Image (cartoon, rainbow, N blue to C red; front, top):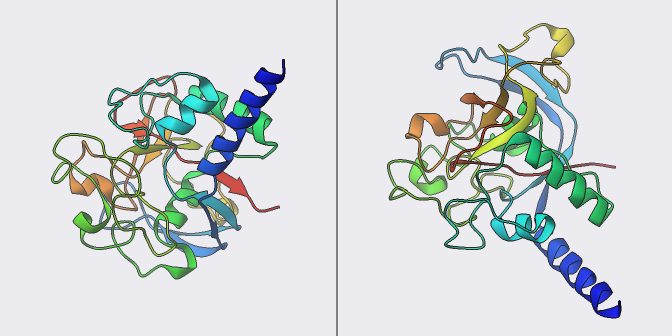
Length: 237
C-alpha cells in the first residue's frame, strides 16, 4: 500500500514538473482572421486573460496521465502526442484535473489565435513569432517528413512555442463560418454544435501556407491523425 502511494506521488510530481511552463496571456482586443486568406474574414474580437501552455502536450505527459501512447512516431518522449481525437483529449483533461486539482481545458479558437499572434506583445507576424517560417515552425519544407520534439524552434513574442507547425492543435470550438455580429465578439465560443471541431496551426506535414496564424481547418471529433495534437489552457482565477 505504501509503495502504491509513493508511486502515485512520484507520478504526480513528474506531471507537475511537465506543467510548469504556462505563460500568462493578458487579455485584450485583436483582429482575428485575414482578408488575404479565403473564408477567414477579419473581425474584432476581445478575449479575457488566461494561461497558455508553452508547448503542446508531449508523449511523456500523456503517458503519465493515460498509461498509453497512441502516437505513431515514438522516437522522443518530448515529441508532441498525436493520434488523439478530440474526445480523448477531453478524457485526458478530466483525468489531469482530477490528479492536479486544476481546471485545464482546450483553448477556444479565438484564444488560440490571440496567443499565436503574441497577444498584447504582437508584432504582426504572419507565423507565430516570425515572418520567416524556418525560425518558428516545422513544416513540409523543413521537417524532413517527420514530427519534432517541442521547443526546438524560436518561441513567439509571449514565449510560446510551435503554434505554427509541428502539429495541428485541437480547439474547443465546433467549426463554422465566423459569426461577425458584435454580440459574439467577446470571448467567442463558436456554435453550439456541428460536425467538425476546429484545428489550428498547421504541422510538419503541411506547407507553409497552412501554418499561418490566421489559417484554420477542421477535423471530425472522433478522428485521429499523426499530425494532430493539442495544448492546454489554464484559466486565470
